[in-house]
Amino acid sequence: MTLRLPLCLLVLCASLPASAPAPGAPWGAQSLWDAWPQARVAPADPWSLKHAGLRQTLDGLQARHPGLLTLVEEGLSAEGRKIPLLRVGTGPTGILLWSQMHGDEPTATAALLDALNWLGTHRQDAAVKQFLSRVTLWIIPMLNPDGAERTQRWNAQGIDINRDALRLSTPEGRYLKAVRDRLRPALGYNLHNQNPLLRAGRAGSQAAISVLSVPGDEADSGALGTRKTRQLALEVQRLVQALAPGRVARYDTDYTARAFGDSMTRWGTPTLLIETGGWGGPGEAGRLVRLNFVALLGSLAAVADGSFEAMDPADYGRIPLNQRDALGTLVVRNTRLASGRGFPPFVADLSFVIPGAFAGEAIRRLEPGLVELGDLADFKGVDEFDAAGMLAVPWPTQPETGWASLREALQARGLVETDEATLLAAARALGEAAVARSGFTGAVLLYRTLATGRLKLEGAVLRGQLAGLPTPRQGVSKPSLGLNGGNQPDVNPVKCGTPSAAPG
Image 1: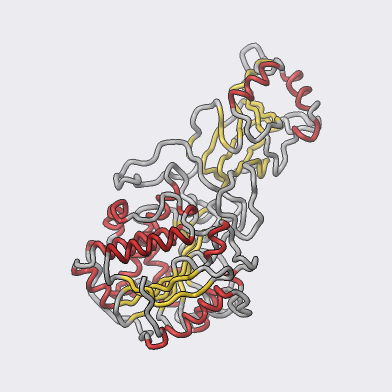
Image 2: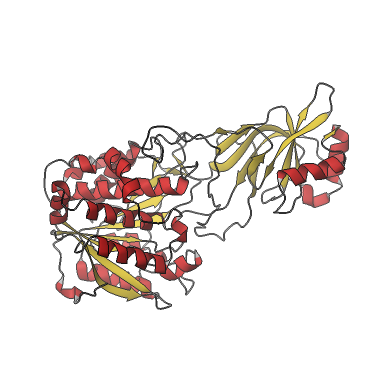
């Protein structure tokens, strides 16, 4: 890579274009969605992309598309890893995009790499030439390389960079602030992952993308350019909604002066927050990168030609809010639960969570397990199973226990087919290890009552997934498009990375 200095000579105009022609076909949501498989250069697992892999991919993009992207300068992380700042385009409107300031939030980083490859591949197209002549993109694809190495939110100092905009104790935070102050870009894109177990409103599906016009003051007065970012948020909603109906939400955070997004807006760079959530099903990680690819390129094109200004900012408040505490990886409905401690069985719903690589602000849950039980009528599962007429019994297991070995062990104890009294007595004898409660990580056995009145083991919930039972139904709507660009929904049972933590 070639180092180009000094950065202080690269001054951008902060004005946005007043009007321009409507975006061409290459920027449409469906066109970009269909183009992504050929544009993809990031790894299939975004969490596997570390600092060395990022640099290798950037080197490859520079070699493949000479002159497209320039490495302008490099900051240094707390542990001395280089943080590249890239420049793409030559236009008067400067846009600063930064990703992975939380090291365990890599989806947008992968999408940015794919977007750069797409721009390079189509650089001779008239629409792309026009785009590159109207905007200058300043991209920090991985602000927290030390955190990325550890797949953790914080930097090597243990500090959340996104809460360091005032004190600037982190070298990564100081670098981002210095870049903004020198460039004074017209707009900012703050790119994150959020807890995938959020819904797009109370009646919505699992939120795949959440947006926020980041306020610059407590009153969110709009005087600091948030009209523009509200319009831009609506443009992202328009693009994503075409591919993922009911999966776009509004991030429900309050103004936080020490957060970088809020500070960017306050400092004069109105900022759009894009949070990637979940979209359960096979290929979930790639599908979310693909959706980011569409949202980023499509909305940036709308900034370049001014078309996003046609959006009515009053509609921003109609984007449904993120709904917390309303979604689980698996929900088992209507079972009779023998919860332990000698209580008679009662009807309950059970919600399970499978942890993923993203942890958010909380300590990462290490094992899949039960998180809530009771009446979960307002709760949804990425997967759901109706266990009406079945008896559920918590049973301690080792993490490596599989369905076959569990069934064999129960067979040896005469508990594959048994009577209820014998089964409940065996569970009570196990003591606290066989009590259903939040945090329980063992198996939940599921028995069906036979015509004779005896119970027969039909399956279990093991490590947050059904075993020995038919594929559960999807509790939230399925993807509208397949990963190969077709219109066939995914049909396999879900296994998605779903932490119990707060959003990013």
